[in-house]
Length: 410
Image 1 (tube, one colour):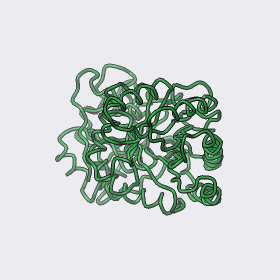
Image 2 (tube, rainbow, N blue to C red; image 1 turned 30 degrees about the vertical axis):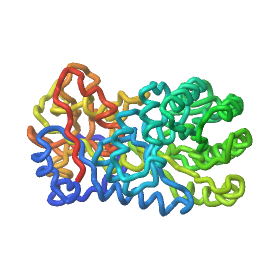
Image 3 (cartoon, rainbow, N blue to C red; image 1 turned 180 degrees about the vertical axis):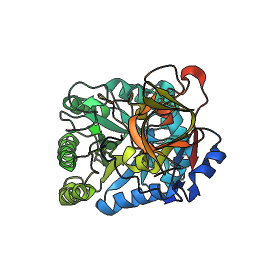
Image 4 (tube, rainbow, N blue to C red; image 1 turned 135 degrees about the horizontal axis):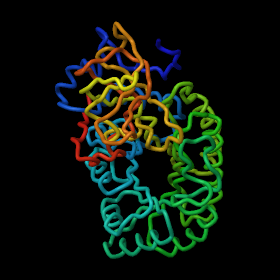
């Protein structure tokens, strides 16, 4: 008997024809033959629609940047670069991908602690904005800029004295490895005035994966006020105030999408103050997961079906080594299932409760635990939705030396 189950977030963004999922206008079964193994697929149409949705809900004066850490696939980044106003990178590898896009270098920023001398040299030579994460990084950037004969473009990443409430991952408030504590920034700016920098502004990021509009609105207001306070110590006028993102997407039963309209309306209310207190400055919202997460799926083929003491297991060719987040091993405190379905039998003629496991020799390799879905056989395709962000690059792809997942943009 199949028990009552909570309903997952809707996956209706992807059409279904003849009970088979369609991605980018192509049947899943055909796309699987093209990929030749377990794969991630990202839908151009959904990416474009999500950016349009964000821009329609935010004030027109607000610039939208894409945080590449969410998904740095080169083809996807190229597509996103035609839609957004800027890119944020978190490594030299991501920087190289960003520099291949049509976006001008001054619209690319580099954040993250522990930038090496080589990282700084590449960033300065490329002319992008470096979000300085410490006083030592500031001194290193000044020294390297002088040796290269180029004036570094810099912003200060601020660790605020508040956090984004109810966020899945808190990036600000308290002691953090990210950014410079807000109370230390004035002294840092005083020193910066003695160095040869092109000061751009501030980057204030307080948390991620938040579905509560009220919490995001409160953090945005506090970030703007903090930026205003710190601007009084700046060596030159603030040109960019990046207040981060934190916009979440629903993964699990009972979660509801973020009320983006409320967030946009509140920013609209704040814009007159921003224009007055930051004349000529650009207010930036930087999003990653929110832009790409729902536009992607992970697909893996069933290679065995077995019953152990009454429990049905579908064994697939892919698992946590491809999609660590879906296995529950990427930040979840209590494991919960992502939305999962049999992609070539979205409804199916028969239903059953099964567990989907990968091929790895660990009980952590679990993609779905006792979920109801269509009855699947060997050769059918398991689909994990909400997989456009933090997929292959956030997973231990070398674990047990299985083949890596393919990525396709359709």
